[in-house]
Length: 84
Image 1: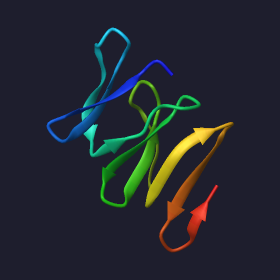
Image 2 (image 1 turned 180 degrees about the vertical axis):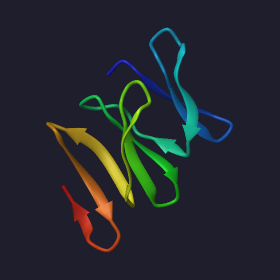
Image 3 (image 1 turned 90 degrees about the horizontal axis):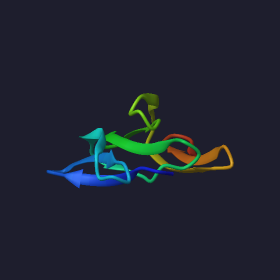
């Protein structure tokens, strides 16, 4: 969706198609954008979603996240298992 993930010195950020840094590397890991959001790991078992500006949309409520598809995403909550 227009941004590509890029790992630098152990942190994950995103660049545009021109190779310009759009979201500064600050995450431990980041998924590809889908439906306008990317799942990112802030720390172990601390996942959330960011938008294409890097603004945090959801945070600290998931142990694991997957990409969105048609407005839904599979997420893991340790005490409750996987939910959609």
